[in-house]
Every structure is written in C-alpha cells, then in structure tokens.
Amino acid sequence: MPNTVLISIFTSLVVSLITFILGLKAGKNQADRTKLQSLYLDMLNHFNEIKERLIEGYPKRWSDYKKIETVNSIKYYPLMKDYQTNGNMIYINKRIFKDAIELEKECLSYEYSANKLIEKIHNNLVKNEDIFKDGIKLDRNNRNSSVVFTGQNEECNTYRTYSYHEFFNEENIINIIDEQKHSEKKYALSFSTRENPPDFKFILYPDKLNISSSEFLCLIKNTLNEESKEYSELVKLKNTLIQKINKLNKRIERRAQEPVSFWETFFGSFADLFR
Image (cartoon, rainbow, N blue to C red; front, side, top):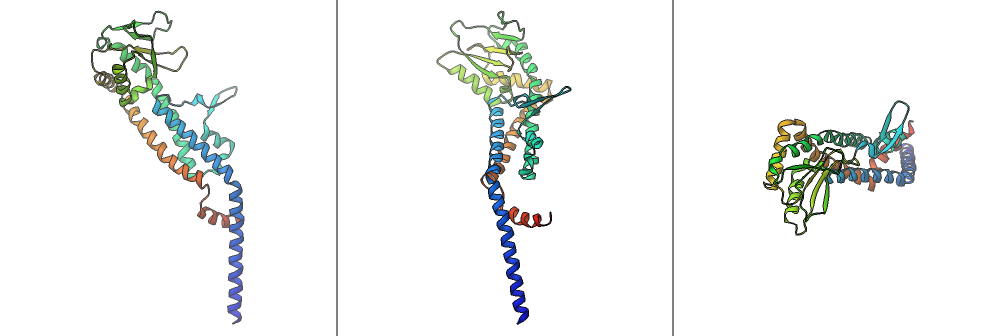
C-alpha cells in the first residue's frame, strides 16, 4: 500500500512537472509566434518575387538587394544571406533555411549566367539577316552600335518592350510574336537589356519575318544550342528553379501558419532543461 501511494505521488509530480515545462515552452513559443510568422512571410514574399521575375523574363540579380561597400569589396545581401548575417537564421527551421539559402544563390547565379549569353542571342538575331523581309538596320539616332531594327513600318509607332531573357522560354517567344502578328493594332517588339541606354537592343517591326514565329524561334534556338551547351542547360535550369521554389514555398507556408510544431515544443522543452 505505501509503495502504491509513493508511486502515485511520484507519477503526479512527474506529470505536473511535464505539464509545467510544456506550459512554459508553449507560452514562450506563443510570445515568439508573431516574430516567427513575420520572418517566414518575408521568406515567402521573397521567393514569390524571385519566381515571378523568372517567369516574366526579368530575373532578380544580386545588385537588386542591400549593398554594403568596404574599402576592398562590394557585397550584396538578399534576404536569406541577410538572415545569416543578422542572426535571424536561428529562428528558422534548420532544414528549411539550408534549402532556402542554397536556392536563393542558385536563382541569382542563374541571372548572372543567363546575362552572359545575351550577347550571343543578340548576335544570332543580327546575323540571320535573310529571315527579315527588309534585312537589319542600325539605329542611326543611337550612339550604341548594338541597337538594331528590322525595316521600319511608317504606320507603326508603338512598342512593347521585352527582355532578352524571354529567349530562354520557347512558349513565351512564340506567343509574343503570334500576338503581334494577329493584333489589329500594329506595334513593334523591342527586346533589350536593362541598362540605360541598353547595351543590346533589337526591334522587330510587324510583318517583317519571312518565316513563321515558330520557325524563327527554332532557328535561333538551334543556332544557340550548336554554339553554346550552356544555353540549353540554362533553359532547363529556369524551369527547375521555378519547381524548386514552388516546393520550398509550400514548406514555408506551413511554417508561416504554425511556426513551431507540437513535437518541436515537446522535445524542446526537455532540451531546455539541460542547457
């Protein structure tokens, strides 16, 4: 009988202690909840913006983010790298943070690699002069010799501006040229780089192709694939990066809704006892 009473008292004490510890931990987690949700939501917005810019053909680059200059260097700090520097990474699930900072670097490195190929894309447009009804002409009003256009249509004075990065998406280019071809209102397509003035610019006026839009793209893509293995790899990489962002965002969304899981609270409570 005495043993039974002692066991009962001991069990009650253990249960009370566990409940007390869990309560303290849960209370702390609740206090941190708003901060954690804010950090995860910032991550979600960050990667959604990167994805949207990839799809639109204007991928984010390192220089779009916070810049810190020293005597010897210039460094850029996108969100995940900034979390690593300012200590916010300790609030993020370790596996999610590891995948996020690697993916961030991959996406920004993609822009750098793709940008190096823009000159090849531009040169391929220019050298295939025979596919344009009126050939290729230099923009005499622009001091940049890399700005060229197809024979101008006097009735057309409207432009739609696109990035050269569109050439990394076959469907986009076909749709862009087909829309121009079937539009009631005539407009020119202007592909350019981001600089002002742009380093490279190509203007395609309506009804100036001797071939269909799909044939036009195939010609450009085939030439680029022959000249640069990196081009075909980057076309695939763009789609891969978008898929990776979608998968990561699902994990981030779950964390934004519930920053700390029950089991993390449970095991974290006892881990705190031994710190």
